[in-house]
Length: 123
Image (tube, rainbow, N blue to C red):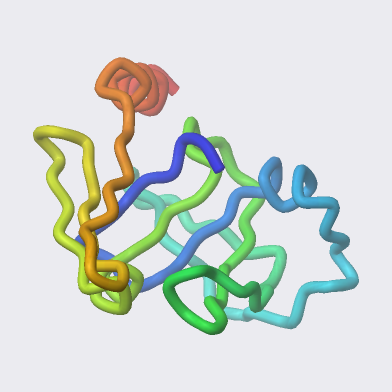
């Protein structure tokens, strides 16, 4: 997955509809999720539903699927970082976590992070 935001201040896993469709998932795969979400600018979004998917860090993660503009494809959160035993750095756009007897590293791109931030601000 590209353009994934690591949000240390949230507990909700969000998946945007373009990634949902890109994974060849169908709306019939969703379960009901009836709570609206509030965007950064204060507008409410009604989720399409929720889907449980396996991830390497957790046996399963419940993603809330939304149809809204975002430069990101998904948002992962504190519980994901905690499950990995990870440390994230916004300065270096990295997440480091133990894996067996070594330290794994997920490296983002500062230029892509800047583009996403600019796109979100301009939208």
